Image (cartoon, rainbow, N blue to C red; front, side):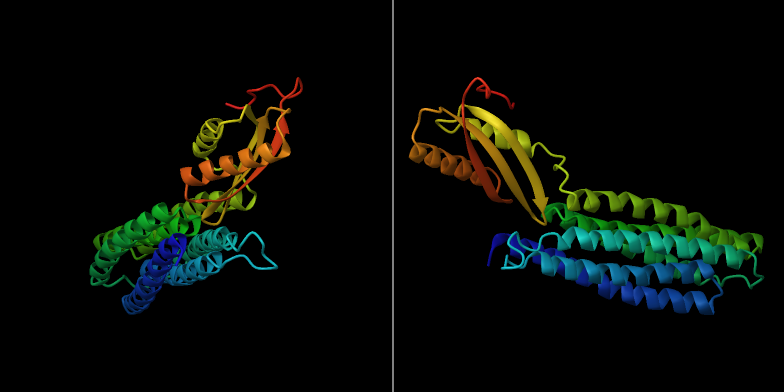
Length: 300
């Protein structure tokens, strides 16, 4: 089994773990909130159920992304991973909007005080979600997955919603004002919206083939120039496709060498770059002869 596939399956397992935990938390919070007259807790349960959907989407996206290239997808299925991240981010934004709308409705509707036992439920929820967010976030960073990172933020937003619900219920019980619970849910919604919008940007950039914000390009250029016969570089373009990087390189060589030597240099450049970074899937090397039009060192 390819190393990348082994690593990505860790992301799939983390997403499935999130599905199980969030489904259990969603049921507990909705039941506790409904019985205990706490909309903030019910809203928190709804947000947890959106986590169930988002984690399922992430797991499916990762599973599709590691499928090998085929006739209809010669570059593989890597784009499924950022597409999953976009769906998760949109779900997070939708949850924030839904909670805000329902909170305003509850504030304007008279209802009973929340039950004190709901505070204990929320303490447990915050602890579980913070731990889950840190675990999933660590996996996302290790496999460089925008979808898994977005899923981690979704878990963290759930913890934030629960924390606001805890504060709101505490104030409601202390002041005997049941709307404090609903105001807490309303205050949590902008944070959820902000996180959703924040997490939407990276996968969209990846889908648009934005250059990776790393020093990878500088390393590729440096290694390429160490190959004997390389006089310089004209272009170095890199894009991310799922968990892999694709490099498009224009290498300058002495225009007097044979086609065979140019072909050999191209293969040596490719091997050197692939050895530099295992995440680089393909390197397309285009040979350009040096001339007055092409100075020897155009790229640093």
